[in-house]
Image (cartoon, rainbow, N blue to C red; front, side, top):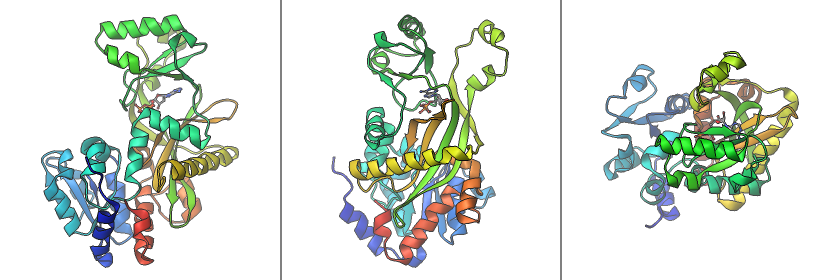
Length: 363
Ligand code: ADP
């Protein structure tokens, strides 16, 4: 397969009418605030929408154009791409776009200018690449165990692919690890292949902060725009009953995300926040040029030694940014006006279009 060529994308963007750009995305995930933010910055907006899913975009009045498709994955179809280019579209990727379009097609077949670095999407999706980026950036991540016989403390066991925390489990010894793996195999929850790929890492007992950053390639600056914490089933329900009943209830904890709360950190932790964001941006520039342009999110746990430990990253808008579709405490500090991640992306595109540097922002 041949990768989408940089020259082709630059030709397309050079052919666009810069005064009539459209901000487009797939109707799912964080698209409401991306489209709203684009409208607030004066752009024309388009949503690629699966039939039957159009109501929120109509009722919240965020989309000027609707490109209706039978299935989300049709966003990469040739006709849809042509329609997007005809509207001078810049497409904003998000988690559902990546999941439905698929990394191969985004890298090889999607000939529409995309905001940010399309190559880095694979680095957040594949656990080994993600770890490589985090390790080479020099940020603190949970210790990994290559062999279950080395388990010497409580660990969290994860299986391949983002499963929204489903099927992850906690174990405190090698025996408990094997016991739980065998029980999952017997119930057909996992297969032998999953066991080979099981990822074992230190369980970090701490508070969850998912930090939403924006790296402005135009200003060469890392911004902190908001934070959320996850609301996960069944763990957040289990924690609401006394410990003795938690044992009696006989439920294994699971970490299936169901929602998000906005959150702020104690102020003395913020230097660490900027430090991890800056380090990741520098690491990404070296490993995956042009780097971490645009929004990214670091999912962290802060332990009682007040260490901020990063256990996961998104190299595009993360779903938790929906907690500040209007603004957050942090984006207020920086901008003093309503500023979501969606609006920040469109502001960057607007600035890029004004000083003829869109080529820096798109791939
Ligand atoms: P997914 O990528 O499938 O959504 P995550 O890696 O984000 O899964 O993990 C899901 C949840 O599991 C997290 O939100 C957090 O609550 C918990 N978790 C993940 N890694 C750790 C860890 N090392 N220590 C403690 N809890 C963890």
